[in-house]
Length: 94
Picture 1 (cartoon, rainbow, N blue to C red):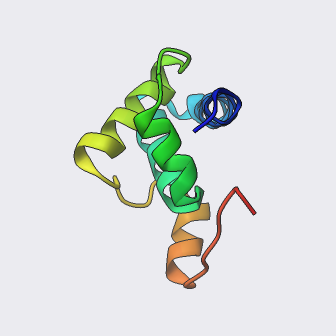
Picture 2 (cartoon, helix red, strand yellow; picture 1 turned 180 degrees about the horizontal axis):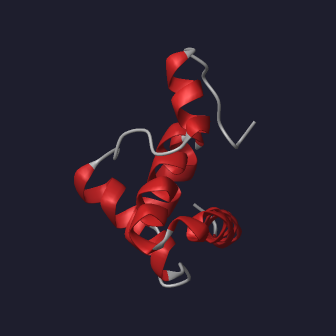
């Protein structure tokens, strides 16, 4: 994992968390974790799990910690519900 890869996934996680803040702190943590688990490539997740997490905002950091310690929180948004229900295999990595 390079420093630039870690910076990129950190920025992505922070952007996702920021987009979910309208849900309130606790729901934003779970929705961020749900999105990352559902749509991120395994390499992206490994990078954020194994890397320095000091650049993560509070919600993103708690979402990553949740995934690392407890696993997937279950579907939290209609987007991931649709993805899981329809058997789509998607990733933000393309």
